[in-house]
Length: 65
Image (cartoon, rainbow, N blue to C red; front, side, top):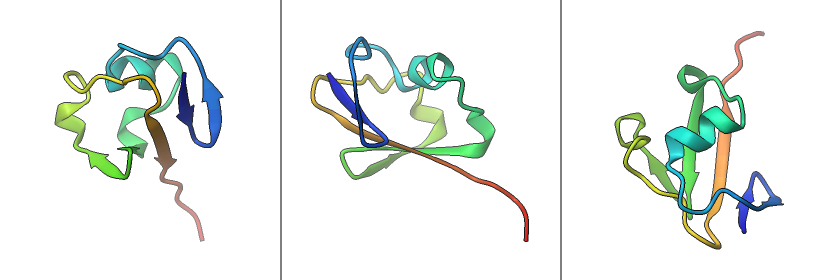
C-alpha cells in the first residue's frame, strides 16, 4: 500500500511513476511528482519504481487568474 495525495492506495507497488501517472489519468505535462519528499524529474518517470509505503504527492498546475 502507498499514500497517494493523502489517500491509501493498493496495487501500485512495483510499478513505475510513468505507469502510476497513466493509471491515475494525470496529464503528464501539467504535473509534478514527489516521492517521500523528493521531486522526481520527468525524465526519470519511466525508471523510478513505486515501493511499498511510499508517500507520493502529485501536484497539478492550473492556469487562471
